[in-house]
Length: 581
Image (cartoon, rainbow, N blue to C red; front, side, top):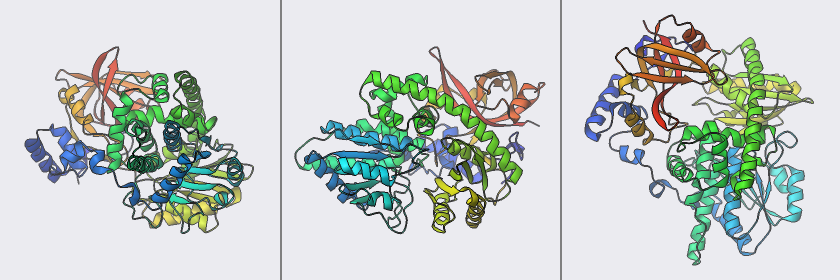
């Protein structure tokens, strides 16, 4: 396929790829037959949507897409044990992971149980002192005072810790890759168990918890009782799905779409407080969940107290919510500063080692384990390769890994751990974690690179930038944005439409905030648009734009609705640019 707009190497070193002639033909036919704007038709065709299934894609419903909870193995046993605990007024503890998915999963259970008249004990391990997932001392302590322990977003590989919970039953609700054997729990509900079909492998843990609640409510209805309002809880499922970068396919689209509508009603005290401190004053989109709300919920588990996020999401007290949101917002600012230092050092080390192979990785003493995951994500984006960043303390390295599409990183790390090169490791296709002795870092990363190379990692150069179509400034209207938003949600596996604005001139370039680049541009035909490139001031776009000298550019990015003092306008969120001509 020829380079789109003849861009073989953009300012960020990427080749631009546009729609094929066949895709153009299908988009034109869809526009004529379905009365949709051509730019939106290009985006739908590019995502494999046909005219036949377009209606279901544009309006996904839980009625059509929600699976039967009992299609997951062990779901019946899990629901039976939880219902037994509810009826017997048993003492319940929830052991959750410290990220958004774990916090949302815990909050779902706590809210449901509270509405059923029970108060559950929340336990979230300290990231630094205890690490990820159940540990034997904590499970042993919880078992002394509780009849049932529910592990959410963790536990599938926790054989010894679950065995240590003597005297209490354990139920696991998880989505991380399972091993050949399962722990001795009453139930292990996980769409990524090795004996599952894989049809629901895209669910995050909060979605698995939601399916459990659906089954529990069904049992209540059969008994002539009314359960809590589950639709009102979909804001938590949406937040977790987007923040955990679960692919927005199948039922995930309906969960997020409906959850965003619930969130817009501003009925959950924690999310209202979080939106307020984040300055979110418009109806939320998936972008806001991933880039504004999610990082703040995560901040407690990264560098603060690990249970802050779950407490915020589960509280019904507006005053407590406001205090927790302020604390998390402060921690998030602190996290960004720590992250920037680790990210820069990790990228410098990885580039010095070489990023031509199947794996980019870096390890450093004192790197905060709470930010290595974000640094790994940045390294993955910069190199278009799976990336691992490891922080070393007292001879032990704790790392996070992020993958690229088509490469199952979790399975590879699980195998390296099984071979004894890691102390522990696991995760899912796109993200994983590991613990390794300092002296074993080099051989472990070498073995991981071998396994990833067999999957095809590193076979390509800098990633292509895929564009849906060309758009002129006059066509970038508020109406078009509204039609595009109606086709959402957008996120992992369903990226928002990206358009190219060809041969435009820059009218204003300035730095805003901390390193963000704000521009105004037009094609000389009248209408001008604003654009913003987050964090781009110190990069190639910043250098080229601030010294443009009247040069013209092709711009590429996604359309945003910008609201300022009540005024609504179109804004381009810039992803890339290239000299025109």
